[in-house]
Image (cartoon, rainbow, N blue to C red; front, top):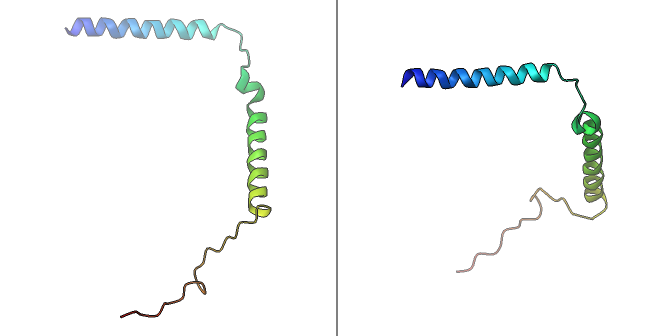
Length: 78
């Protein structure tokens, strides 16, 4: 069983080596992320900022996070 496993690993290593050599001789071509990655990231950050800026300033949400002054004790009923 051990020689079979060793042969399988050797085949896998050889195919990885062949792929690496084949790709090393190719000319590098920029893909979508190389061309537009930063632009997409900045556009998403801008949309995120604008939407949250609008939500925090214009919608009129009352951000009363502190219960001080709003929580009052009720009369005890017996």
